[in-house]
Image 1 (cartoon, rainbow, N blue to C red):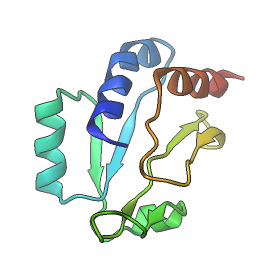
Image 2 (cartoon, rainbow, N blue to C red):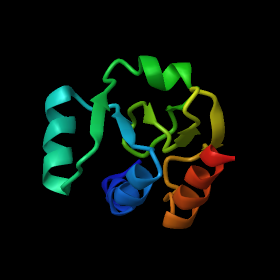
Image 3 (cartoon, rainbow, N blue to C red):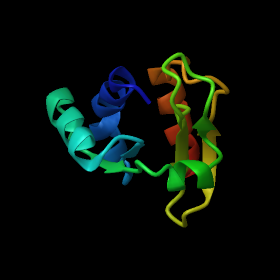
Image 4 (cartoon, rainbow, N blue to C red):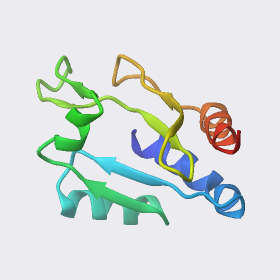
Length: 113
């Protein structure tokens, strides 16, 4: 997810927490870069770093065909139930997709089903 998408997620965080949920992001950046980004964006949820792309590969999210000629993660959102099972996910094929508030809200709603 890009910074804008994470900020959209931040705007919904209070609603998720009221319903017993939370948010966690995983970045392909370094620990220092991820922490700096989270602070500058005003994020109040956990942002983890995966510079070796291990978690990103485990979820099948590596994107090699980028304009920046470097491998990175495609944006994705996974909505997990309390038991850890996946209630919904959104995994576009391109890193250029912007995740919307509507997709985030609908995905989180499915965790209660």
